[in-house]
Image (cartoon, rainbow, N blue to C red):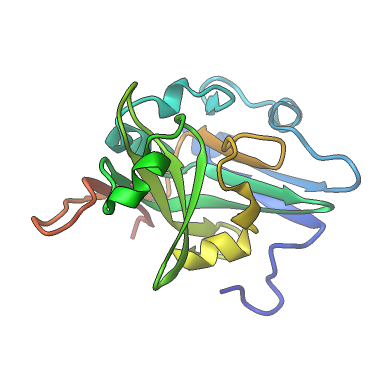
Length: 213
């Protein structure tokens, strides 16, 4: 949930992007008007180098891998969503991988082209996942937690769909005109923790990015 006075849906926000070099960490402030900022524009204006920028994901090859690999690659990524004249951005700090569907009715969704948004419902709410699998395979990665770095507010699971207005993105490519996931070097103030699944768990891998103490 968003704290009063720290609503990320402001027309002017701070987008904090991590750098492999703490001295080069940049904070970029910009306004969203009638035109939507594109990722290459952001990269150019921030003068990001190859050291800072691992990849702007505008191709599906990254998602055409085992979901465990994709999940680990997306931890710490920036997720950016624009709707009209508003924008929200945060860091993926929790994600897990699901190589096979829990229910047979999900098989078609798990088999979609890699990189498609998969919004699904459960008794606990709606959840945001992305198809990730090798050719002829199945699998998704589920975004479990997003952190707003400027305020340290965390949203998890079903709240992500509502906060980022993702319901209408189901079946669309994750890096379309209104939704981007930008993989970058993880902020050095974070560390990645791997949570190994138990025998009863259906997911195959889970990763969290947590602040170093």
